Length: 201
Ligand code: ATP
Ligand code: MG
Picture (cartoon, rainbow, N blue to C red):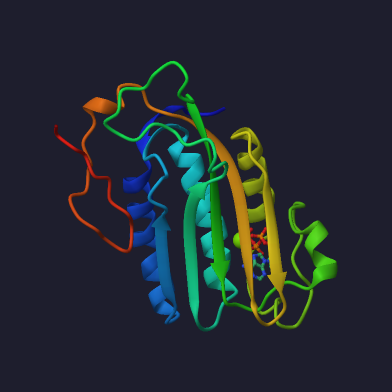
């Protein structure tokens, strides 16, 4: 079941980045986490489930990377269908939901091309020497795919062995109503996150 509530994407990302930064730091990895400026931040949806997907994918990125960086990015999946800017009154023609594209890029060990097709199956783990020194049960991606499907999205991966991997997923979120009443929760730029600017006029 989905737990649909209003949430602010920026505070979700900020909280997520703080949790992940600890894990990244322990491995000496840089963690970059940001949303593009045109991404609406006041959304409705299952924030807990979204966190779970991000935790799984970023957890993998950190686990399978020895040096370099992990970048988590959020963008509009359909940039031509821009939602109304915050503070604008929404008119009838404005879209009521938005499809977002999340990507989690690492500079880790990568995934052999012939293994990619089974990654999202339960209990599947890449069977190479480089991979099997790591723990886990092989469920994170299978669960993530299920959660993404519940959010009317898709999940996929691009990878190159010894260079790195980018997992991406899309998900659909209804926009919160009454965006004009909402204020940013975080007053200034933090962790590379874009901050909502509200025009009081
Ligand atoms: P669990 O998530 O249950 O703790 P797991 O991490 O092994 O275990 P999945 O998250 O489902 O399981 O990932 C499946 C396999 O895909 C991993 O075991 C690993 O071989 C490969 N994999 C996943 N993410 C990456 C990544 N970012 N870089 C390289 N290999 C990856
Ligand atoms: Mg995992």
